[in-house]
Image 1 (tube, one colour):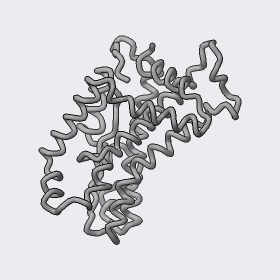
Image 2: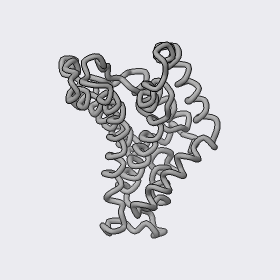
Image 3: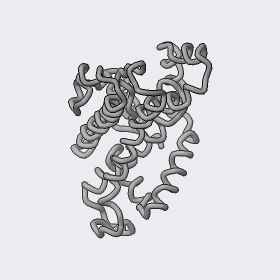
Length: 235
């Protein structure tokens, strides 16, 4: 899905998408914090995570700098974890799994919400029309696709992503300790970055799953992908 990005084409639509994306990242992190609080970790309230204020949990590197660089290089900006959870305070190991799943789940809910106005049953937009669609269609399409990609990306079982947290308990304590080291997480994230930035085939599973989900829900996948491309790349 990589497409060349021209910095001279920084449109109001793209600016709106980036602002909405920051809010999506906030929702992702807030979901982690909320479930952790429900699971017994009161430290998230003390640290100010139970809010949608970006300054509370937006990591300047993983949540803003790296996604912006990825976007400018023609890739897809994706969220980075920035909420510190006291896992020892959680009621059980299952709550740790719930906390990890909360982020991707929130992105999928956002995908559904942004997709809803595009559903043919509502009649707000004709997905088969060859005429140029209103700007809001591209906005909602872009946000829907971005949140869908974020859902799948975060489920990849590689540290520091949420997918790794979901399977971490199956590993030995020594392996868990090794994989939790900052250097290991940075290296793993760097490999993923290079993979998705240079290998177009790496996006095939994402496109396939988007087609499966949109077909199941009756959503116009082609329209959404066109809107995504229009919003982010002015294509």
